[in-house]
Image (cartoon, rainbow, N blue to C red; front, side, top):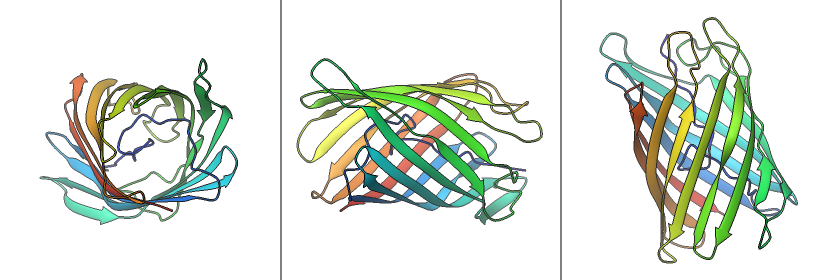
Length: 231
């Protein structure tokens, strides 16, 4: 079985932040997440992400992914498996001397039985994120624990940190460094980076992107391309 682990993150990065969508506002993403390894490529082609500011300091989150994978042995596979649902809650607001802090529990919910892209088991991610801004500079990060049941799977830890800068009202660029422990009996822990940002065509429309590579143990390249519409 060739599986793809959806990104659980603040697009276009793997590391997330504690800042929820503003009250009664929406975010819509149409995007593609891709991981390229020497023997297999996998990702979403595409996925729809929806975030809504339900009450102050609380965001509801949903991802509907069309997954794909490709290898020389198994060929090309396309299908739907798990739906992602989460609630982001900011419990400390940012001040001059204090970062904002929040949590963002996420569930991967088996929706359509598809052994190519899921094992039929619910997965749960429990993180804590922090963020601080100084003018045009913003930095955020944290860590979380994945409960990952299944045959030959392991619970695993993710931690990452991101820094970004608003060079102009149109262009924001940044980068992240992240680490995760092994999530399966035959996998290894990995350290990797991404660089990317956003091109803000208007207040509502944003083109977001990132690319990166592993630095330790495993060898892979990542690519994220997306369109964000905010209302």
